[in-house]
Amino acid sequence: METEYHPTVDEAIAEQAPQIPRNKKKNKLKKKRRFSDEQIRLLESIFESETKLEPRKKMQLARKLGLQPRQVAIWFQNKRARWKSKQIEQDYNTLKANYDNLESRFESLKKEKQSLILQIQKLSQLLEEHRKGRKGLDGSSTDGGGGSGSEYGEIKCETEAEGQPSFQHKECLGLQTENERDDVKQTGQGGEEFLIMDEYRNDSLASPDKFYGLHSADMFDHSYTSSQWLNFWTWHLLPFNNIFNIC
DNA sequence: AGTAAGAAGTCCTTTACATCA
DNA sequence: GATGATGTAAAGGACTTCTTA
Image (cartoon, rainbow, N blue to C red):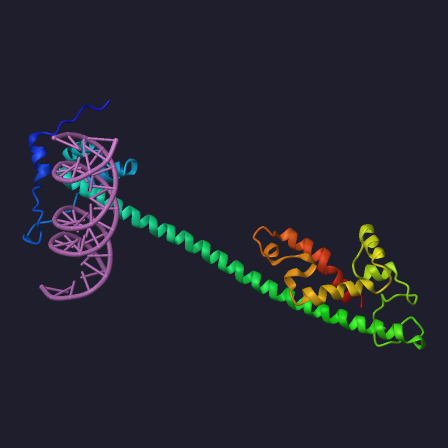
């Protein structure tokens, strides 16, 4: 338990009138003495536990260090200022690091988005060509049906029987699950899926954000994880890759 | 209870000195 | 030795909080 500290009359006077002249402008010859290492060490150790000193502790510490209480008070004041500016510097560095990190992430996502847009444009072109090819085939009965001799004959997954949508065709679009097959069945006759694609293209290919109902806010959200991207590629883009590969 | 004055403390800025390259 | 840069003890002013009359 700490004993009650009562400043002596001398100390009280010293507190009121420090040895060092307060008006430095009128007395420029004052000697400024740096504190000793031992004094600094003790001051630092106390500052670690409390950045502000109670008057009583200040007097005790001043006595212990052989300094004026005012000198101790000023040291703590300056120390607080130095500590604060260091804190600000640290905070700045942390914020800057976070900002740089976000910026580079943003740039890489921008590049990724650009490459996805390019892919979508390519796919759109391919679908357009495919659609034109089908129109040509449907309109020419002399062609013999298989399409093998047409300019689009290289599309091997084309319908085997004229006018008959086949699962093979749909698999060509990467629709592999039963549910998806059912969905396609419900869309009606062959080729309609391409019309559906057209709807997407007309609206969303110009605006990739809406492609397949994906919104940029979701896609480029931080929470859009790698596995979600993989999922996106697997279920929405890989089917088109199948077209590329097969055709 | 509301208020003005003064004391005491803090923060911020500036000054002056010490030290070092 | 002179000089500029840097660190720091200290001064001074503005402001806040608390006490007291």
